[in-house]
Image 1 (tube, rainbow, N blue to C red):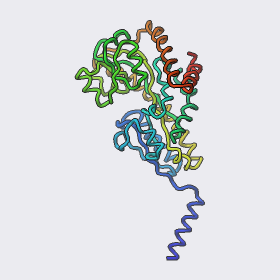
Image 2 (image 1 turned 90 degrees about the horizontal axis):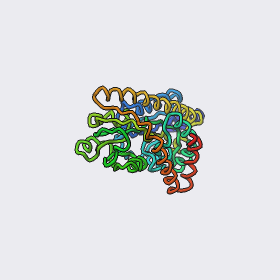
Image 3 (image 1 turned 120 degrees about the horizontal axis):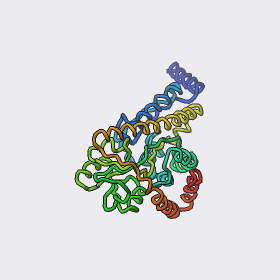
Image 4 (image 1 turned 180 degrees about the vertical axis):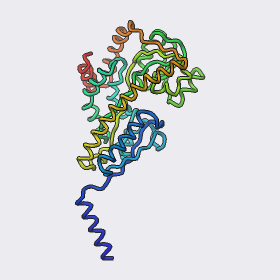
Length: 325
């Protein structure tokens, strides 16, 4: 017994001398499809982290719906330590100030997004800290555009039609042009289109349209807004890592966030061409209606921020200054 006890003590001393014990993290993503650019990027993160840390940080990734965590609760589950690491698209319920980046027509192209996102990163980091979470980075989907069961050539054609949206801000845009915004889960969309519950959706060719294109013969390429995901870690789990592993994780997430965004942009073109070849009518944006739409939405941005408080007014101002709007 004395020999075993001495051996155990010696092992403990050696472990302490060699540094912290290897960390075994549980990771989760909202996406349930393993072939998406988002999931592939998360897989690369786990592999590269293990490689760069020499196995000191091992991350096991679970796809959406494989854990008992609702998509809207991912940030909270991360902060509570139920999971250690996550990609979250539905984080705005926990961190609503992040929706500044998703306001309709505020950010209209890649260059504006990069400037706006860089300006907002300190705000995001502080907001996620309040949730017990470390904000590490993120990635962006292509522009959210209209896919419909009716021939849409301009925003005027929205009048009287029911459009599935994924945020209150998208809903306000649809309503501003005479449409009726409807909130549905992704799984409800195909049946709702078949039954006429909705007449269209706001999504991307590389997003929901990959699964629903057979129900949506028309695509009007009006860029309403961008959707984005964040990559986060539980604050305690992150702080328990050696500094070198924390730095490695941040660098890997930063690089992969850019790679995932680029992959989505490339896939957008591929999917749009496939959808057109399959018979979908693609309508390019009517440039003449953009100035009036921007003006209408600019008033909405101000109302939106003022209604939510000074913190939101400041965040909106930061973004508008960054992109010159």
